[in-house]
Image (tube, rainbow, N blue to C red; front, side):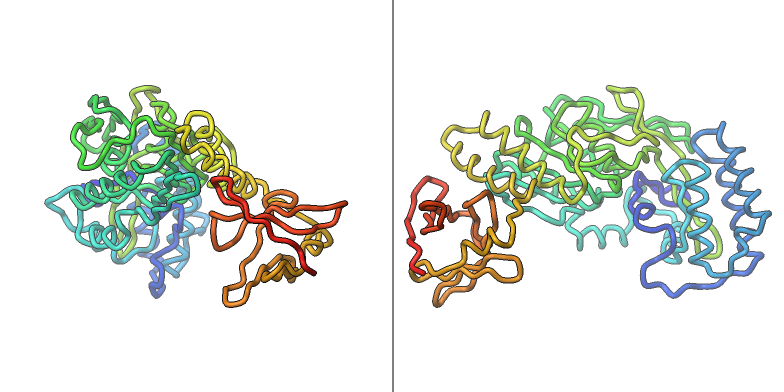
Length: 439
């Protein structure tokens, strides 16, 4: 994010979440004079600064046409902002052309900052959010996962956070980066992360054409990193329609530098760089004032978005990525871990395509197995043993179940003449413990 008489950014988070107003703020009222003045100010900004000069006249004409018809004669500031913002995106077909009621943002955008990439409020929020890296997980098969909610940039603090994440990911046999809910942020934060997946060759990542200054700036692969490079590890990146702007830049690098596999649905299609301008009395207008250009395509993803390599709805994309990673590892991973990958793959496939058994089939497993009791209730199987917490059994295949409290044990039921007569407790390394049915 840069600030030029306002905040200039490469972020779409606020537009994807809401164009209405600040969460929890008490809605203010405006006069018709203020509403009409706001429309005039927006038209002035579009006429002067919108990145595509040939589109300015059409956007302004349609905005004024709707204003003349009384569409923006609204006294509720939040509703006014939401209506204008939605119309601007519809008219321009540009997801960065949002408008919102935001008294705090208005005050901030009036200020000039000596550090054109930072402001104290953003730094404090990024610190509370761990620079956007909200989850680090070790999935079965030692697939390492991180969720990145936004490409925050706080200078050295972000650099350190990314290095810490890289050290965690380095220990994995494959990597999943989840940006399916990431609305964007800073190009510097993208540079900080994607550099870990590229060799230290200084290649150009993205060139930004700035319509405000007429200048062209580029980002490059960082030569010196505080953490380990992650080149060569299987990489899977989760995307969705809520992946926008700077997050799309990251996905665009993955695609065009052939760094990994994109899984999910086509992204938002918001490539232009935006600048945030104050609009009296307490609004913020985002205007697209620049455009990025990738060195491979000499273009970007504006309006068309980035399509996945493997299509999946957002709530299934992680399961798809786990299956893809584990399938690859069973072929190319270390032979000493092959049984771990195969073990994990069974559960991942069951999550990808859940196993559904009839109530009658499930009830057939209920009974007494020595010290263990298996009950069928409320559509699930529960195993109990004196002195231990009840555990749910999760179907992985016919006669094969996992335990809800561990991934290191499974129950494989055996049948005699069609009747269930017991099960084996099995472990990833192939050990078995037979348990007979007693009632």
